[in-house]
Image (cartoon, rainbow, N blue to C red; front, side, top):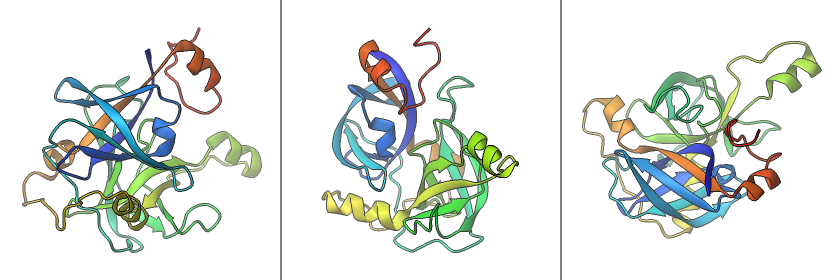
Length: 226
């Protein structure tokens, strides 16, 4: 098995349950959670291809377990997006960007999503979108296709990114009998450290044959296929 692609995820239970996007884990023959310099094998608990959500579990105890906010975010709310854009290509450190909620719906009036202007890149998928209290209000899922928008409108889209709302994510987790925490565990510590301790780099493992089969469906590491 080869490390073929990557994404992000975050802890939602004390038992090692991680929430991410379905497209991050789709096609993976093995999946690893990277934490404290170790690789922890993850198993798939449930997936929701329609809402692009997936639940995985590793045998470890997260330092931070995020509270999933059950309220719908409001326009202009400040948010932070955490994850691992471009995998470890730039560095192995977590990256956090800041922005606002720019719209309460996604593409095509998809009200299970919201639009945000915080920068996200390939590899951010599945990472948490958090408010100033450190509570999850969404999950990073997509950005506009720059080339397609340029061909259609003659402009390059800026700061047009999308996240799955926390209400959808919470319903998915509870439907799979996950024991979510009932209130935030953030205790006015360093917010960056708090976010870092609960957000994980996920590596998707595949055989070369599976990689070739999935080429049109995922963003793969460029050094895998010549």
